Amino acid sequence: MRESTIERQVCAWAENELGCIVRKFVSPGNRGVPDRMFIFPRGTIAFIEFKASGEKPTALQMRELKMYRERGICFGWFDSFASAKDFLEDIYYRHHA
Image (tube, rainbow, N blue to C red; front, side, top):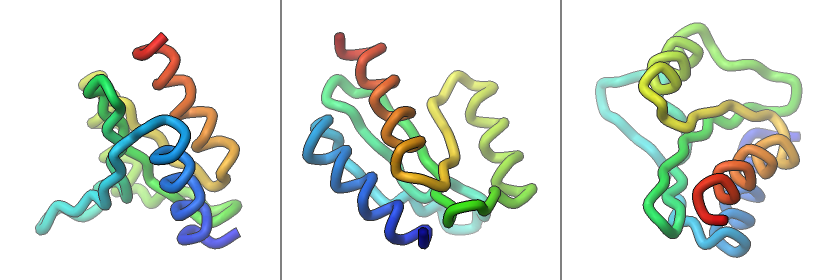
């Protein structure tokens, strides 16, 4: 499946089912930043890098992912709707149950 299709499906689901505010994440001059930022109803923030089915992040994207995770920031990369949904649901239920 195409990256844009997965991204569109996950963003619509997160807005409608979890009540997230979803924004395209852009950081001029900083390559490798994640595609989207998800802001949950109680202020928790997560980032996702989307990939087409079977693709993996670049080395630069993996360094960015590592940097975020080392600081305790929720950040994942996903190449399917199901895996991204599981990630977001886990965050939602850990912080909003």
